[in-house]
Length: 131
Image 1: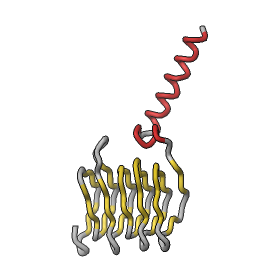
Image 2 (image 1 turned 90 degrees about the horizontal axis):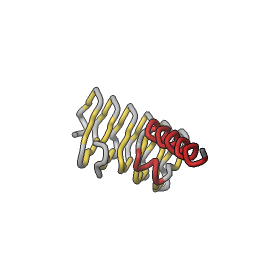
Image 3 (image 1 turned 180 degrees about the vertical axis):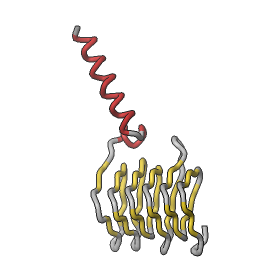
């Protein structure tokens, strides 16, 4: 999308999405995909991002969840929390929020609900084996 484009609403994608303009809404990649989000210099996102791979060289106001890898380029600014499996930060980038590294399982599973279900199943298995 070009620098003069503004999208209002949530964006769901697969493949590669390059944001040079403004997105006001959440950006989500297809589950299980190798999708990559690139926010170019001057690009802006006002919303949460949930993707496997991200390169941020613009401004994000919202939380980011990068299941595999996130690169914060020299002009990348995130005003929100960043959850990641691997992170690369270039000098000049900034995160105004918390950084949280996800475990390998979290980065593949995705949702908090799936993690809670796995924990309950694990506890039930332990109780069955003990009894």
